[in-house]
Image (spheres, rainbow, N blue to C red):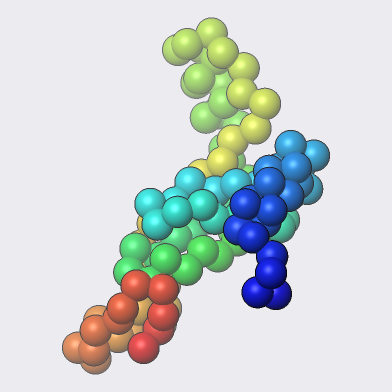
Length: 104
């Protein structure tokens, strides 16, 4: 859609974030958005930037520790894991290089 401005895209993404239909993810490479609004965590590849959903429960003790240490109650907990995805790990093992955003 060559006539669609990026401003329009980002304004609509912000509406979706506000409505809770999309989640904005922190990203060093610019804004990233997740279309899965259900509580889940992420594995983020430090080489290519791929993000995989992880459906793990945060340990209840983590929120309890926050409440005891700081007197704050968390409404939700998100944990991001960082490392190499399988494709990038296999490139490292074979000595190949991976450019950011692609697997090869």
